[in-house]
Length: 237
Image (cartoon, rainbow, N blue to C red; front, side):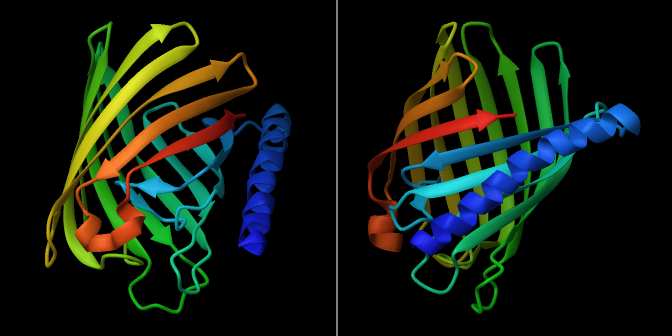
């Protein structure tokens, strides 16, 4: 596990070092769009209510590109622990997002790659569509995602996933948010997941998120789906 965390830490550090390099390149040979990087440490890596780090901490990092016209792309990585030989996840993503007044929309695709695994079908594609509306006191987002092999390391099923989230700013440096999702899986019992928590902006240094997760999927994935509190420290460059 420590080797995995070290490998992920080097990955995240590498992303952080890439950002100034791009910024310097833009001074002499401007590229279209903008680049940003992010790093994070989480007490548990949760996706759709399921722990992908075996309830252990994970180190994460990413690099994002925005074209300025709505098109975006990027790469993101995290340490994982499935109980087999997979120890890293890399996500390659692209899509298009836009806004019309308070209404926002997005369509995109992500490829989830587990480079060290020898398990057949563990890497997979996911496509998603999202729509949101900012009412002022609160912003609501609705989403739908489809994959032919949902989270191959754990479930291996064709899945439709529906989600709804609400975010409420309560202070200049604090927001509260909650979400619910439901997975319709091809050959397994469908399940729901939900979360609620708060995000604190610690000046311009980093963000701290404290969140509760739970599911009704204990029969599907056991302790990977247990209820838990998760803390996340992140920074965007």
